Image (tube, rainbow, N blue to C red):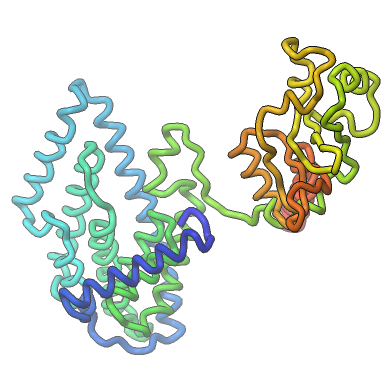
Length: 401
């Protein structure tokens, strides 16, 4: 998710539940991948799975760089780009002749890896050739996925490393099946930077609750290793290369934590509806408190808001000097309420293409209580931003030797 808000998480959660229910109705409720019953891991095994996550995280960085390195290599070929997928297809086909299991989506391979159906040299060959086939076709510009290939490569690496650990140090209590599960999820966590999604996906497809703790340890370690070495994920690296600003971290929005009535200007300069323009121009020329704004509410004789006029409107040459100010109002006013947040006010300014909003009473929507402008938003934001920067500076000092 690009945000953690009800408008996003509710439809996504409902869609996930609906998809799962549909699969259960059509296919059954059995797990997607077969994993034998596993035992509760001890602390030694958990430590191993965390270290395994580090290794898989490093592998995910290398794989991501390999894919984009191949993409750069294709770009240097002295042939038109439309031929790149054809060249990639030659590699895919040649690898497929050597190992047919590298072709296709690969869910059957993942199931066989986790259940112990592919072991030893055969598994090593599958991992290496799948990596070659997938990275070349993806680097050539061919449309393709990342989930199943990464699961195959990560699951195979995890199983191989787990089997080696079991043979060399049996006392660790490492289960190669769990190591394969951790490797499968950790490589996706490292490559995509989707930590919790990787943990939940691996659990959802195997239904093994005793695998949750190894998954959390391994995926978190992989994410840490990847995050330290790779700023962008395999999904966003291309966007970043094109110059798009890609957020990698999310923080609380300061403006969403401040109400409009905490930041608005309460001393509002307003104009009477029938006041002539020449008098208003003279007032602005003389200056004074509150007259530095670029927009001013216009009220009728009962104090009801009619609209907002800007300096540009007031000084427009086409308006006669003696015209009443109400005659130059161009639109109905865009307003804010005292209990709105500054984020809501800022978004409303953008939608309405205005630089200020009169603040009105909800019970009396035409009664002006104040005015909030872009400068008020900046004034509210800057102290909190400065405080955040000061906190970060102090943390750096505290970490210094």
